[in-house]
Image 1 (tube, chains in turn blue, cyan):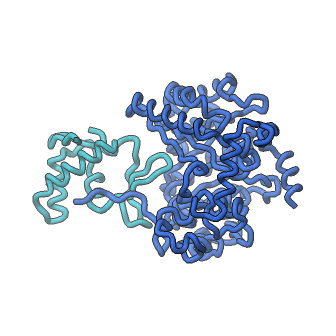
Image 2 (image 1 turned 90 degrees about the vertical axis):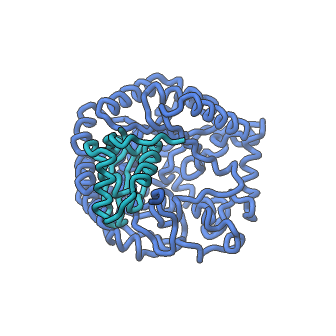
Image 3 (image 1 turned 135 degrees about the vertical axis):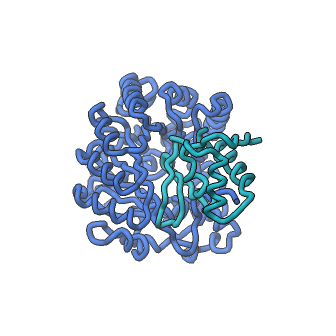
Length: 386
Length: 91
């Protein structure tokens, strides 16, 4: 008997959409400067109804989806969350709720437990505009503590997620200690990825190499010290690498996002890509979306690649990196991800890194205030881009 | 480095995981927060018998009968030792 296989890798014939991310709403009580929701979220269409979502869940499950994440925005903003969780559970999904904890009362926690919710991922983030150092913000901490206690009382495994950036990375030891104190089984230290709102604020959020190395060293020390008590993931910060990440484990390979207005995407941010029509679950079934739609087929496999990817010996390892990053930094979604030092546009990444190292806050763009995610800023930025 | 699971122990799938048959993948899978392990046939057949009531020796006998095989004890023991390291099973 041989060892079991792990998650399937990319193959010419796509497997099922194993991961369904249901972004229920863009409404959110928080204003995170690193939010991955699109900057123009205010121009998104009306939210899917309860019945629409129930149909999407059934279709996705029939197409082979097995992990279901309820996300947002803040998914607790939807009053029908418990109904959707119950149906997902009944269908045999493993159900994950990705929340800031705002709005999770003991009553709703009990209802979600009864509905069969399997797991809660609780994120730390700055919930105020006034304070960048959310760790010093006691209201946030009190909230997380209350929610963490609720998670424990209901017997859910707890994953804590914290987006790490220039302004909090030096407190990584306190973040880890907080997660341990709150009883998390897993901690994701998610080094910021520069999309959407984080891209708007990149100069203020991108850490120095020394900050990153220190954070990684401290993380490793805690891993050794804490052993099995908590599993700590340190998400690789791709700007500081010389090879790109295998984004979403391959385009249209395992991951299907449905946005609040029903647009189906191969990743959270793909809607930004020009010249690609993504289907809407109101018009097309999930199976057809996954296997037949142009949006999902465009960057599958490697036949779309250009040089230097096309002849690169490592192309199967990273599949050319991220299409959105290629579009944002090289102006072409079929280009090599400029994080790769083989990309002719790698200089763009090096420039951003050089600014991060610069001691001159004004010249490096850090004197500008952070742009916080909210509807007014969304409308302002959307108008600027037109 | 992995410790063997005693033949009279009654392993069960850990509460951290959910074992489930997935028709679309034609496989048993272990589900956990935001993740999945797809099991090969033999791993699935062993784990589905880890119900906290059957002893390892019973599981071996069961598998040998179900698959018309013999001498599976070592393979099962090796797999269970690995599964315990991965925290897939509790004793």
